[in-house]
Image (tube, rainbow, N blue to C red; front, side):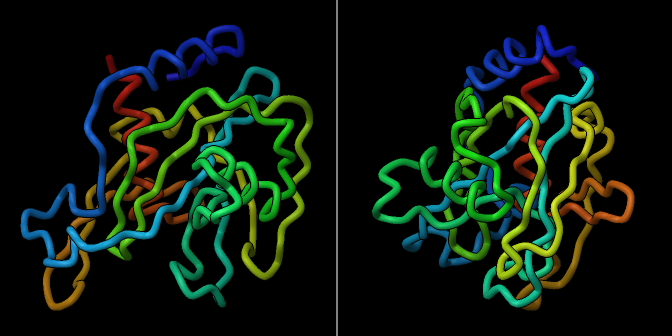
Length: 202
């Protein structure tokens, strides 16, 4: 579904105000590993929505293949919450500015999705914001290989999300994917996007 710029902000706020549970990398797997209740590192990502000619899109990145966590994967701008950040929102905005040169003052934060817990022991707060004004990405090459956009309308269609499986720690692990062109969007990123899409179905 597609929302014109006049109604997009309102639709997003209404979606974020819905009371739905947190998501996790284990949503499709019944046997939660023992470390699932262990200490997690707090992180934040920015779901940055850019509108060009009434065609909104979501900004995503391809992470550097040299990173320790999730190398080469498709992700939102974001990372660990530092002590100086104080809030998840400040962390998400800082990371987006550092990774893709999206200025903090350009983002109108509308709210947050419930936290998402990853199999790599991060508890991620997805921050949702609208980009104001022109945005020309410039990547931090140590962290990001590429920045690209996916149409908002495509990502809000639940039928575009598929369930796939692969072996992890000797067990079959199921996860969501939402492929788009040459980009294989999967795992936590796909699950967080689907959590937003679920809120647009009511």
